[in-house]
Image 1 (cartoon, rainbow, N blue to C red):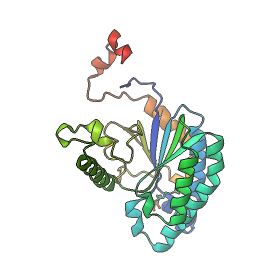
Image 2: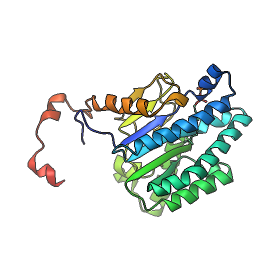
Image 3: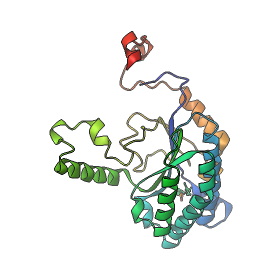
Image 4: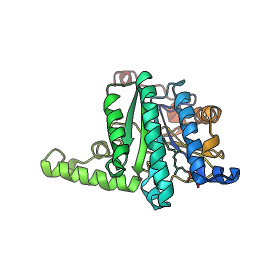
Length: 252
Ligand code: FPP
């Protein structure tokens, strides 16, 4: 486990909040905030390409977001669909793998189909992954993981008596995705809102006052610099982190 200050994050996850407030400030409809939010998504995805980041996770739609007015939900689905269609070429050119976390099958069919096709088309890329959280909620994820684990136990591929976190966590949507090093939330709100609650156990959290449509490349790099200045101890003491790594550990 690497922890020293100066370390680049390998995985950043973002709660993109504040589209509605931005739109209201501008005297625009909420959906215009989401439209501008998509531009910020494009800018941040491209900024991530300038770094060593291996995973970028974006919280696009939560299980709770279905409670919004139907018109807003439909507009968000429409924006998502067009975003995916337009980004497909970029992802293929840049060799970025797409993964999705959440109950993707419950989204409108054209969104699910587009997601599935891009996931398939980019599945061989290994260096960089864009993870979109779609119809995602951490508590729903736990329920789905427990169901998956129990099915596996019934089939005999898991044994509850020897269950460990390593084995159980493979049943989460993020089974093959490392935990986020840094979680960014925009718009000045200081909460995680049912996002990656188990995976964020040791994540650094950065709250930005900037509303998502105004979040840009510069803000993204500022968050990374802030992360690099932090000391991650993973339950150890500062002194322990200074201790030289034993020779045998190099072989691990
Ligand atoms: C929060 O702002 C934002 C959302 C619920 C949706 C985020 C979606 C996008 C940025 C566009 C789609 C994303 C991708 C990855 C293509 P809010 O509406 O809750 O803002 P408010 O709190 O100010 O009302």
